[in-house]
Image (cartoon, rainbow, N blue to C red; front, side, top):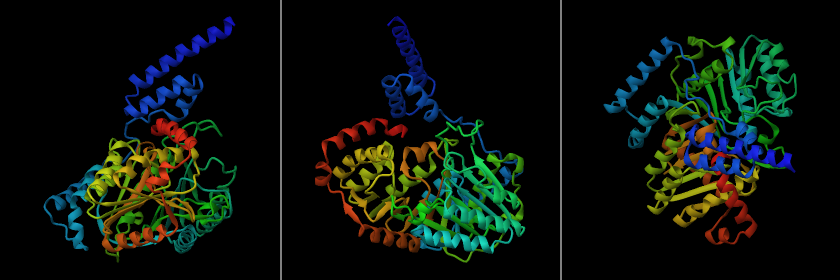
Length: 482
């Protein structure tokens, strides 16, 4: 008994110091701090292991290294566009977009997101058409192919992609594939070997120094980007795998949103890929050569900004963009997200909009893929329903789309979920669309999806089982660290 008592005392003392470190050294958001203190106190020993895996901060140092020449050039471009905004010298293809000049300016100054309006945009709502289009563009590639995905599966879809890339590499096309080390942790040894043997380059984002053991669950690269010859770019929610094609019986139909873009915005996607690649593979860093940034005029009319955010930045720029969109709403706000764990600022924006008479609608899956996150999601719906926000549960299959549409005029589509993990802990990228026709198309898609939903009314919400309410309350306490 004496040994056990001494062990318990030692663990208790260590737990106290660990909790003190979280409170006084990390200087986190208050909600995050209390969530970790609770985990440390109620799960002695185990809580600290969880903290080592999930809770470590990423240094705020500049992890992306940009040459002095390129930094000066980008700063000059930013100053030039800043001047055009402040002096009202931008003529918008869509005159209605003049009302959102301040939002574009915020994205430029806070996220270094250049505004282009020569873009053509195709919208995909499921994986098959997107994947077929991507493979066609890969087949037509002449100079380079740059791909970045959070998840790549060892299945028919994943192997088909590697085979297509290997064939292009054998033809002399420069191929680079960047994958997230945690997102692709289940891939077998040698999965990328056919591509590497053909002359392609493969790199992992934030890999572990210990093989098969990566404890850095936070700070993952959740971005999904594809750039072909600097002419065509893809961004959205779809990873690479059979489940994203709707072929996994567990999920059934997979509802997602992905964009194919041609025009000036592709060059902004290219720049983000190069930053991520050079961080992950400095030995094979990409230099900013003209062939990666072809100076061709786009044939479209869509205004767009490509906004990236991540734990290396002080500002949560994608979240700020969402809040700005909601505050600008006059009639409708339509949100689709698989995970909904907002912070107080976003929650307040949605409540204020609804209380102001705006028709605020949120669509989430009716079936969970991560139960703890799903319980936390339900815990946030109470206040919104009371404020008049409408909630819809998608029942056709699994909803993985990540989109925000306001008034049928502006929209955002990308990789960021409406949750704290996407806003603070993961590297994300979203396209902000400033074009009435593109936004109206996304609004029509939302309306079509509503036909596959059941509305979660306040009465139905109150009638949920007692055990669900208990689970939701527990998940709510942990939601800042989920």
